[in-house]
Amino acid sequence: MASELQALIFDVDGTLADTERDGHRVAFNAAFKEAVLDWVWSEALYGELLAVTGGKERIRFYLEKFNTEFEKPVQFDEFVAALHAAKTRHFVEMMGRGEIPLRPGVERLIREARAAGLRLAIATTTTPANVEALVSSTLGSDALQWFEVIAAGDIVPAKKPAPDIYEYTLEKMGLAADQCIAFEDSLNGILSSQGAGLKTVITVNGYTCHDDFTGAVVVLDQMGEPDAPCRVLQGDIDMRYLDLAAVSSLFQA
Image (cartoon, rainbow, N blue to C red):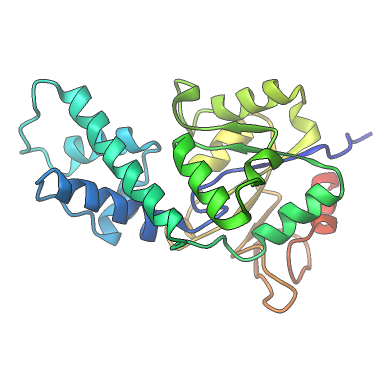
């Protein structure tokens, strides 16, 4: 007998909002300019950098793979941390100005789940400040309290695609993987959620639409709205938009 659905666990970047191209990338470039670095991360380059999760890790990857001539300062760890902190500040300021909305259907589904008494959590590699800024600016200042666990940033040593962040979330909630469903947007994301044993719903974006989502319960172009249907890209289900009934059906399948 299948377990009953108890909780929805959401990734943030690319899943709740399309933050990568027009949010994090822009904030990184602002931080570089502020530090008088001539680095510019184009949309195409940023797509390649997304192979690595975590902002500090992404800076390191860029220098190892794409800007090998840069002479690293002696205090390299501090240099990277300072750049990342500046980037976070720029990102939070963008969120405060309301520059990045939630993706279609996200707020509707979250409110539906709350009304039905389901538990909510966040499992992400982005920093806590980014999560707080996004959630507060889109759902309201009290919305952070809707999420029982916000597992973010360096709370676990191994970031996605390692399953650690989801395992941490499940442990904090006192739930088993077969009582929850995850929402992701990328290959690293689904490797992480599936590694923790979670059924996973995927909503792709421009950077992840060609990723391999083998094993996802469904792959959608977005969650959709009643007046703006989603497209089912992978999976055996007919739906106009992802509501709680559809999520429950996918969970039980």
